Image 1 (spheres, helix red, strand yellow):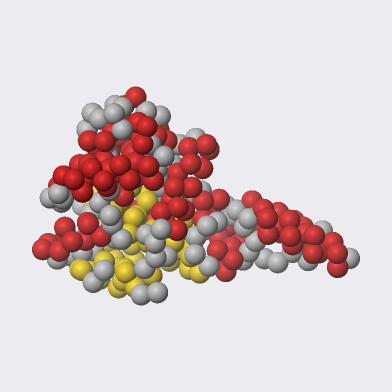
Image 2: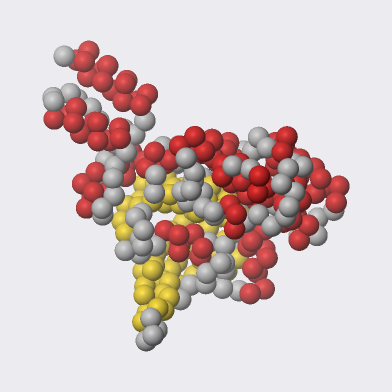
Length: 282
């Protein structure tokens, strides 16, 4: 796979207080994101993960260093619309993204601003709503929908712009468990269609389907690898004041009981298989 995002020595600072004290939110971050990949970025509040997300489509500009999206420099004002067309963003509060009084008008808003032909907009809106299982609500008012339904409409609005990349900045933070599950299913389906997915989250169970997990701490990359590589380092994760996935914790307890359970297992099916294999050896 080819690189679609390149982050070089990215540092981002903001100021606060009466004295404009400089706060470093990102500290010399270097990362490459591969086209078509699913990358999950985890970290506690203040770790820099959401600041990183906003640097990926030009909402924030690096204090130093650079971010390139599909070859375009986010600091180049002349490239910002090219970048926004390639890298769509979904935020945690869907109310901040909904702009119209009718669902289908909301989904059409982005493509209309791109100057897309009306007939093509119609096709894109219908497909995007079907992709998020909201086709039957296209004439509804967004304010009458549930939180999970609103988030699906927000996702449809981004999908209708046909970006190569979708950055999800804690999209399930305001949803109940059922709503979170529905949104994660949509994210995984979009990835299966070839869209590059970057998921910012603090829910460990949401990273199971990712190709790659990055853990942020104090503005830096603490761990970076496959889910198995990252979650094999449970003590490092806990030292960053983060919880480990339930299956990782279960594996630790079973190993203490003498079972031969590999480190890094994060889903139930593989845990059941590992337990059965361990029992058969005994």
